[in-house]
Image 1 (cartoon, helix red, strand yellow):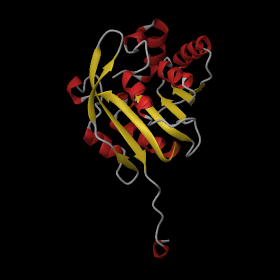
Image 2 (tube, helix red, strand yellow; image 1 turned 60 degrees about the horizontal axis):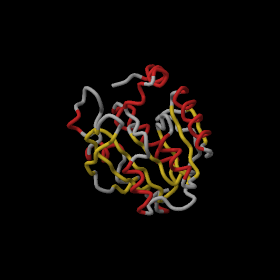
Image 3 (cartoon, helix red, strand yellow; image 1 turned 135 degrees about the vertical axis):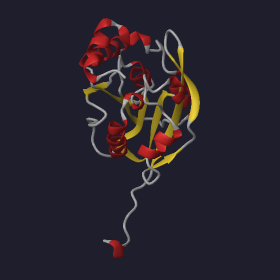
Length: 207
């Protein structure tokens, strides 16, 4: 598990290129092509890293906010966005405090953030995703599968998704196996799409 204080050095040294695709994530491109992301949607890329997915989405006309705790990563992302000629709102932030307003986001996309969070951090992150999403908004979670080994990642499993993204708050799609590509290899991963449920209003006699 990479500790928080190592992220800046990883981006400064170029180590981050090991987990970058070099192109838009294929599974993300497939979702866009399927029409899951509606025209003009506001998208939050949580743990955006060097910004490749966020820039891809901005190039398609979506309103994109990229959040990462690494200032070095955000500077890399900003340079790339400038070169691509697209506007992306880059903001420093963490999984525990996503720096956007309540019910302001249509789509949260997460490529590899949930799988580096310990269980103690996952509950807060799931609450933040719920807070920032509009009712009916979706979260797209992709990360390492259990077969990768817990010494490296806290895997994305059906049990973990149901535990933290609870049924009272989210409607869950299937947790499916996918390869998560980088320039050097493909990691066996899982992906799930979650939809924020409407808040249940208490009955008058319960108020």
